[in-house]
Length: 582
Image (cartoon, rainbow, N blue to C red; front, side, top):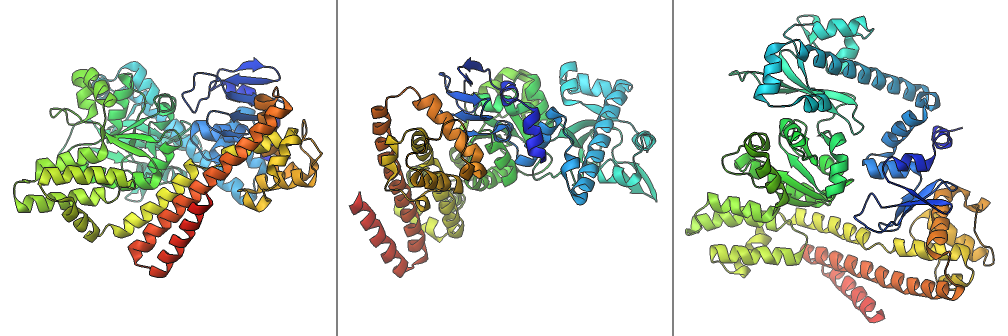
């Protein structure tokens, strides 16, 4: 038996999902409020018989693995590992020798890092200077220190190294975990005389550390982070995410701050949807990790030149990652959220509730830098501002900011548009338009309607008449194509309780359709089902036409940008034909 099936047989899907959603019995199924939307009427269903779930409000569904991936914001491998731990399944038994070796190495490093975190916690309790720094200077309370596993690395060269070696770890393993370095031919502790804050993965496993010096000393780095290891990748690591997931999902927004201590202070102040990029600049991977939980991202960066530059870079990344970006304004007398919280946590809470659109924030910063009453000031302001405006996808949004810049600089919109077209942002703009086109297609994806139509057709032969003009090749995805082909080849065969042999390779999708049929259309009359199927066919056709039209318009813009006359004429002709058909 494969690992996936072994896990599935050991776990009840309703028990796993019940840890995240309050479920109530609804006939043979369970029902609750969707954890992915803000619905007030329960439309989230779990079927123990079929071992699948479906969220009517969001159009999502699948098995226990897909649920954990969605709710935890993790990939399949991480979901498999999480569920294997719950089920008591040893994944190494199902891996090849190479995979087992790598998995064993990762597990050894995780064990060493967890023991190191415990060691640092115990060492903190024994050092009065460190205790004073953590509790009095940083003002962290006991619950916060316990929650984030804050500790202290002593001055000793090899205190941790000796202890872990006694536990059977080798010098090589300690180096690979980022806990030891080789100095003058001997392995010694990586961190010494610093406050230690563990860096955890999405499941809360320690994968590294950030270490803060207790007394700022000239020439000494304030922070030291674990170097890149098999477990720790600073370009993907999001500090505090494992503790912030629930709050991010509940608030439908994540706040990104610059420092890890800003995150800790925010959690202590009762604001849990706050995270940080762990010791590096914000990356596309950071934003993609967070997008699994929310599309709304608020930045709380410094308003100095470095902060503005970081925000400009984030605008580019946000377009690619598909998140909506805003900025939180800090009072002038607070250099960061941590300092603000020490003064008045209420001001930080208030600031978070009223973020500013990112382009507005950036333009305000430019205005403070340049004198727009002079030609030179106008040139510099528009150079910076148009570089940002040119990256925006929405033409209405672009027009809004062009209007605003025209008023601020007393320059015509035509002049601003000409200048924007001359900037070196055109290749990026074309790339971002393509990304936007893909996102538009996804957001207007008619597949949700198609799935409802297919669900009707599984259990109602009369509704199948609405599918007669569709061909499997017209549908997206092998599962939909296979089900449509089966229905058309077996016009009188109802699919009810079990998945037909021919569709076993698409078992999960067919079970979702059966759950849809049972919970949504089970009590409907045959006539109502037929009319619903006909309506769904019209809606699918309309949405497909819209997606195709949007794609043609996007391609036409690209062709116009490139001056490709032949392609322009071809696309215009195709667009005109589509408009005539509708």
